[in-house]
Image (cartoon, rainbow, N blue to C red; front, top):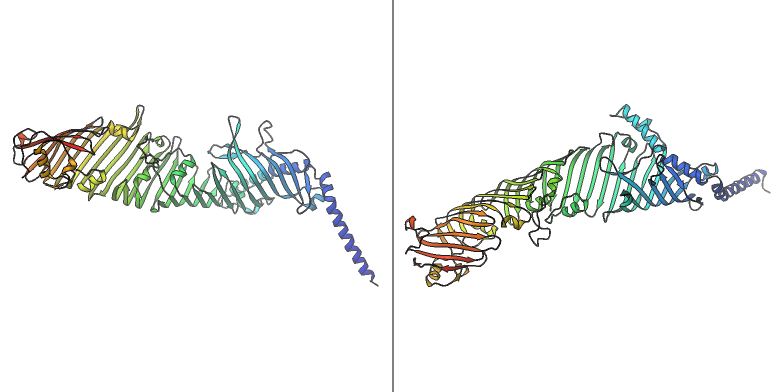
Amino acid sequence: MPSPLIRRGIWAIGVAVLVIALAVAALPLVASTRIVRDRIAWEMSAWSGFRVTIDGAPRIEVWPNFRAILADVTLSQWTETDAPPVIEAERVEVNLSAMAALRGNVVFSTARLIRPTIRVQRAAHGLFLPALPSGGRITRSIDVARAVVSANPAKPDLSKLPADPFGTVEFRNGRVVTSVDGKDAEILSSLSGQANWAAMNSNATLSATGIWRGESVAVDAASSNPLVLFGGGAAPMTLSFKAAPASFSFDGVASMSENAYFDGQAKFAAPSLRRALEWSRAGIAPGAAIGSVSVSSKLTATSSRIKFENTEIALDDNPGMGALDFSFGEARPVIAGTLAFETLDLRSFLSAFAPLAPANGAGPGEIDISVADRIDLDLRLSAAQATAGAIQLADVAAAAQVKNGLAVFDISDASAFGGNIQSSLRFDRKPEGTQVEIRLLASDIDGGAFGTAAGMTRLVPIGTGTVSVILKGPGRTWDSIFENADGSVSAKFGQGALSRFNLPAFLKHNEQGGFFALDDVSDGTLPIDGAELKASISNGVAKIDKAEANSAKYKIWLSGIASYAGRGLALSGGIIQADQPATQTNSQGPNQSSFFIGGTWSTPFISPISRGVSGE
């Protein structure tokens, strides 16, 4: 027979099993009688610092976890009874401690908010944040941390930080709203994620996903000492933001004090800068397609200034280096810095600040420099190789300046067409409309290469020369600039040739009389000793004051007008023997073959006037 000791052991085990079974069976009863709605609401209020209300009795589940399921939960400010709740959730699931429940206490480590609505408001620094609680364990812990940091900002005593437990907060399918004209306006939807913070003096992490401005976004943040961070001290911090239009990350040290700052390594990338700017609603409307951009930089930021040092930047996979400085004044933010590239598309880069072409390339479009009302810009650029439309440049030194309604883009020095280029594009917003000024000085260039880039192939001097263009006009659209511009054009070339011009064939056609197209005599090249052009422009019409080309035997001259709007030509000209006295130039002398040029720029035609020069 079993010994008395064994029998007593069996009885003890049986009693223990019975007690455990009765305790488990009694949990729902205990919960429904002692862990009542008000007790849970009180504990949540003490934890969060908000006034918590729960509609209906909680539903208690024992298996697989002991938890309370709460319906229609709201968290509100204690002092603003008429204001809408800061947080409201259709359901809140709270994981409870079974042993604490048997003692009549409420202890929970996880709260799960189902379909919550979080109300935020714009703070003074521009960010949208929820209202802060006026009390609660979290607020008291932050107050203690603030005192610890104040006692020794450089090296706070972490052992004095409170160690109150916090736990995990999960949220599923929520949204963030703000009040606009008394109605809720949705900022973020499909919000899901969780915050893990075991104890106030431990590390914390946050991960969340949602939909912002029609794009899925993901945010991850972590800090090894968040309580010091919330208390105004400096603490390590990592932050990651990912979305299809753009991504951003930060790894360094941050402070959320009155003099908040960030110091660390930052990265930014966007497959399309244009799309990222439009999605961010930055108020910048780029007109040309801007490609990918990526930035990696040492970041130092305060509430009034952001500095990017040792910056590595890539535009359309074109790498560059430099430094940038963002200052936030009372009027407009100021962007200044220097960037150096191996290769750079100047037109695409500048289009981020003022559209230089329509977005789809289908037409001239309207010129929009509204960015000049939003930022002040002072950038210095350099590039070993660069493009400006069809123009290839080397050793470029350029600048972009935007301030007080004025936008100026200068190329102070660049090599192109075998010579040197200087240009300036100036937009000036005035009450009567935007005024545009274009200046170009091309020195010691190859005239043939310059003409090809400018789309001119007929009668272009092939040789070394200088070209100067100055245009001013209203800037509602690009066409309106040239249709109404005033200014001047001048060019001077040395020894070379006139492209696509068969002089003997021209003289023969002119001798025979009758109309003929310039294309009929374009199968040749005329050697020249030099050429010169001077024209004044008024309301988009060029008046040719002087246009001469001198060869060994002949002098060719033109005068008249050319219109930009209709592309029309009304020119008179002549070909005279080179040894003819200058007094007979532009006359109808016997040794001159005179003619009229009409038609359009693309299809000019010749009408003979006199036939005094032989092509032999």
